[in-house]
Each structure stands twice: as structure tokens, then as C-alpha cells.
Image (cartoon, rainbow, N blue to C red):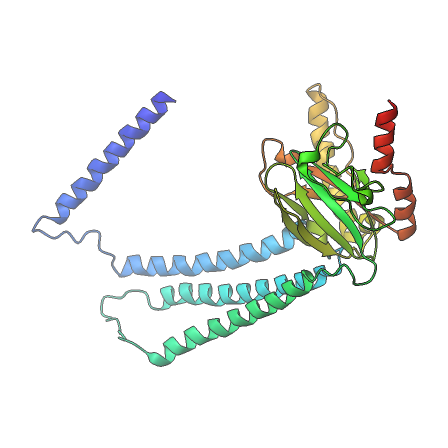
Length: 357
């Protein structure tokens, strides 16, 4: 490393001397026009600019066609439809502006390339042009912002009295998640990190009767077509609950409760059997099989076949094992959800089991 840094310093010193020599040349009375662009240089540069923008457009089209499998499928939540529509409108507008401005920039670089006999036409100002290129972006951006605000307000309109929403707590800690379901009272018991002790890893208040029937799980099961209100807590640092297929993300902040709500509309099984996901899983497993051959040849174990599942991820770099902080999400019918929930022990039952031991 020392040798490398020494070479870098020497190289930089050489560049400095070279630049200083160019400055000295500029200070001399004699003018050297050997580096001034002539008509041949301008023609070449103009054609290169035109060729580059054509290449850029072809590359863009190729990427959209070749890598469409990397796009997210249709949203698996009710509000995700509005979210995706807003994203699509924004991307279409960006692409239109990019294509027009980039195309004009390179075309004008070619059309109005320098010629020895030509003189540039200069406008000191043009109020009409300035008004047009100012007012159009203002109107477009104002429309996007207002539409976005209305969409965000609809998404964040969390009303616990609206219908029969399921209330679930998402508890984040380095480096895992836990879900806490309210019991038959549909009300979560009080909790605080100061109460964490023994099996009480979420810090529930043992004196609060509402918490006795709460159920703590390491999998997140959700009933399809039922609104779910998430109340989020962090034990240690800033985390972020990220559920991309449901177009949901919310920071999980130590010392406070953050909220987000959505209604799942596609079960895990339906998404797993969708045409998009079947094709994507097949591609992934093809790559994994090729990698498995290399691992086996090297004496390691082969990779297991990939099967699609929804996951809750952490989207904040929260420490050394951040990359592995995830929890499986299973979206199922209301009947299957209730059957699964019945098999989970309550917090009160866990306390009784600990006391008896």
C-alpha cells in the first residue's frame, strides 16, 4: 500500500508540473493555434455527438426490453395501484423530457457545429422564451406535487375505527423482527423497552391486562383483503420496515411509535403461481444450479432451490448484519389466518409456562 501511495503522489506531482508548463506557455507572447479546433475537428465532434445520442436511445430501449424481469410485478396491496400510477406518470414525464432535451442538445451540437466563415448569433434576452421555459416546468411540477400529496394523504389516512382492521405491532431490533398480534380485544398491551427481561423480549407491561392475550411471532401472517394497521417500535437503532411488493415502507424509530397501513390483495400462493413470478423463479433457479455445480466441484454444499415468499426487510443500514434482517410474510385467506393464529401461544401463557418452570 505504501508503494502504491508513493506512486500516486509521484504521478500527481508529474501532472502538476505538466499543468504548470501549459500555464507558462499561455503566458508567452507568441500564440500557438495548433490546438484550436478547425472545421475538420468540429465536423468530427458534431457527428460523434449525434452518434452518441442514437447509441444512448438504443441502449435505453435494449435495457427496458432485456431487463424487464427486474421490474416489480403488479402491486399486492390496495393502495399500491395509486402508488404505481403516480410512479408511472412521473417516469413517463421524465422520459419525455429526457428524450426531447437530450435529442435537441446533441442535434443542435451537430447542426450548429463551428464553421470558420460562420458567426454566432447572440440574443441578450428573450422574455417570451424565458416565460415559456419557466412556466411549463412550474405547471408540470405543481401538478405532480399536488397529485402526490393527495395520494400520500389517502395512503396515510389511518383510521382504526374504519371497518374491522387488524392491528399488528412490528418490533425491530438488531438484527431481526418480531410481530405482535392483539388478542380477542383487538388492542395491543402497553410496552416499553425498560420492561425487557427474560422471555419478555418485547418489553410488554406485565401489569397491563390488555397484553396478556397478545401473541408474539417470528412470522408475519396477514389475511387477504383485510386492512392491516402496523404499529412499529425499535429496540435500539433506526430501522426501516420495507415491504416492496406491498409498496410499503416506514422508518422504525427508537423511542416512538410509527404507523403504516395497507390492505393485502394477493395471497402468497397467488403471487407464487403468477406468470411473472413463475418465469422469474425459473430464471433464478437456473442461475443457482449453475452456481451449485461450481460449489460442489469446490467441495461445498449445493444451493437449495429458490421458492418465492413475501419478506419484510430492513431498508436502513443498521449494523453489520443488516443485510440478513428479514421476516417472512405469509398472505392467506381469513380462515387460514385465524387457524394459524389459534396455534400461537399468548404472552400470558408464556409467562405461566416460565413461572411453572
